[in-house]
Length: 230
Ligand code: NAD
Image 1 (cartoon, helix red, strand yellow):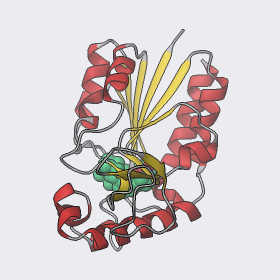
Image 2 (cartoon, protein in one colour):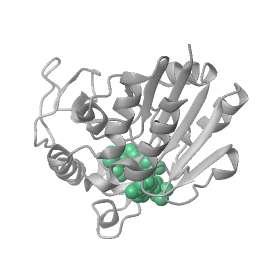
Image 3 (tube, protein in one colour):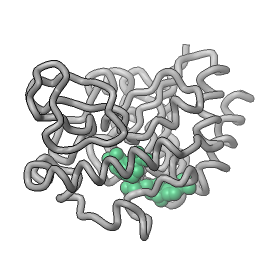
Image 4 (spheres, helix red, strand yellow):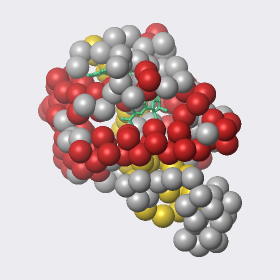
């Protein structure tokens, strides 16, 4: 049985209206990463960080999966082997499109996490500093997203998957955030065929055996059709 592991980044959701890090005028461009995506930023100004993620949560809830998300869901349903999506995205668009094997290595906007006891629950649309944890009652609710300087989720499982991968694809990711940027090397070392699908060459493009440049909504359905025709 063949194993396909697919890493996705902000670029796959760009055509659903969710801005990438680099989009001008987007949510990310209005804030410094150190202020809204680090534990230190949250300690300094939790109200600002909650406002930032509240806005992203509202935006993501209104977004629709695009042709790239749908193509990956089709691949999982039709492929004879196993297809796993490892996403850096905190939106829920892979699940909305029907993908079932999805690992959110950077957490999700739909989740809340207690910084005191580690309890997890469904985030309300609006979070604010001092909201109590439903389990331990500490006023320590935070978004269940992984910030810079924190350990991404599911890493042991992801490394196991990469070691057993026959095909590894990276879609819509700039290759600048580790450890995800090194997955291509892990997969190649294990003998996988590696494919980059991106608007433009990523920082780690030279590590890939095959490249497909263009919009995810065009290139991902094309790649999936080629795989399923084999
Ligand atoms: P990034 O912003 O660094 O890079 C996005 C990449 O997508 C770029 O290489 C760009 O060329 C490419 N791209 C842009 N539009 C595209 C399109 N239409 N089709 C194909 N490719 C396109 O994003 P990243 O690599 O995912 O950065 C990692 C961090 O960004 C993660 O921590 C992630 O949590 C965070 N992030 C997530 C979201 C989201 O959940 N939707 C949005 C912004 C940032």
